Amino acid sequence: MEYRIDNNLITVLPEGRISSDNALQFEREVTELCDTGSYDGIVIDAEKLVYISSAGLRVIMKLMKRYKNISVINTSPEVYDVFSVTGYAELIKVEKAYKKISVDGCDIIGIGAYGTVYRVSDETIVKVLRSNDALPMIKRERELAKRAFVLGIPTAISYDIVKVGDLYGAVFELINAKSAAQTVADEPGRLGEIIEKSVEIMKQLASTEVKKDELPQQRDIFIGHVKKIAGELPEAVSEKLISLLSAMPDTYTMVHGDCHFKNLMVQGSELIIIDMDTLSAGDPIFELAGIYSPYQAFPEISGNEDTIRFMGLPYDTVCEIWNTTLKLYLGDEYEELRESTLMKAKLLAAILVVTALDLMNRENDELRVLNLRHICEITPLLDTLTLK
Image (cartoon, rainbow, N blue to C red):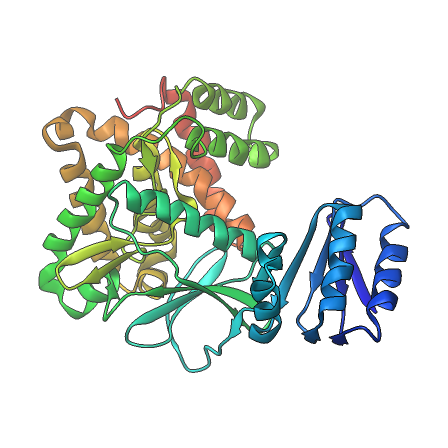
């Protein structure tokens, strides 16, 4: 019997049938494997298992009593039904196998640091992750989207998880929806309307409170970013950055963190925000920094060609989106807060850019040097990183 060990979990991969003919042999093999070390749990990967009898279920019950943390994954509908009908699915964690789909020939809606979003039909899109931790990330995003949805945030919740080759993807139902970027490219006259609606969503996020510790603090996430790139900065700069970030109070209002036009979907007259894996809590300045990156930081050096390739919109248009968004977001305080807000957003966005280049394994020395310079130039000028 094949097996593997990952993160102190032992995964066994039975094939064919587990019945009265071989149930005791299966028990003996699993026991011998598990007794060779101290493992946190056993995973039975049933992808190649076509049948399990009551004798096999009794063996699993004995293993449960002996080793406690046991789960069964990748079961076929037939095998899952055996666990379900006998009540075993209530005693042990049992997961069905994920449906396999192909994205060959599908339109690419967007490409991010962790994955690619494809349109697989007029009604559905699938976000395929490249990360080794794809399943936990997808499940976490589903939970975050549910929390946001319950609190009134217009978002899409993944209704299925699929396999695309060796990768995993989250499926969303978005009937005839297009990204805000694609909508503006097709209908330039809607730009102003969509900017206004995007600002409404950003303000709604910033006014939606969550419980303490329900979401990670953006402040802490950025402290982690700074520590990762500290070796590329003068010591005094990295120390002041960490000091500024550490001084920010806990804030229990939502931050999406990546609320640009590729993560906003237009469905009729409604705007829906997707990619909820970045959902966190914190000061609204982090929200503005998150959109400054694609609207200003990257285009500043990559120019019109790369801006069109990433956003699907020309440089002049993304600049208009940024400038109008900032003006609408700050409202009556625009003149008073514009310069200081720009400095803070530019600083935080520069940190994001350097971090994103590392995540995407992209070598862009010019962009890295420019943003490291921004960090060194702006940090000494700031006394606070809060929006006000």
